[in-house]
Length: 117
Image (cartoon, rainbow, N blue to C red; front, side):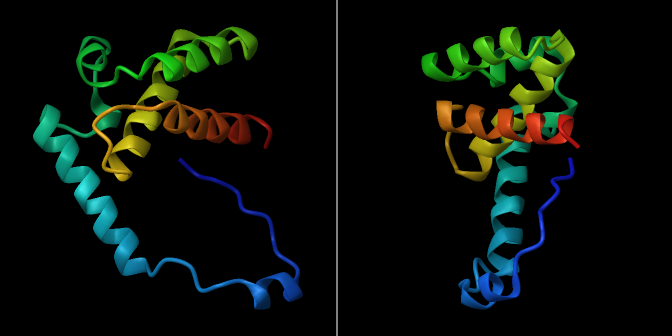
């Protein structure tokens, strides 16, 4: 997955905080990877449809949001599953055992951003 990030004006860039150190991000990614392997024996992107049924169930609000997006954005089943896998990964990065509506919303935004390029 690639996300395009627009350029910031020099003034805005100079006023921003440093953000999260790369080492912290790398540690969080490694922990999310470990969670995936412990839970299902493989990374989220390799899950089959039946495995997704067991490991990628969003909460009620997340499921409703995902279904609404699928209908409104005319997604195929493949697109639906890809977004669900990304939402599962976002939940793993947040150390959340449950895929919540916020995780689904973020995954939908990534999908929409990629389509608008």
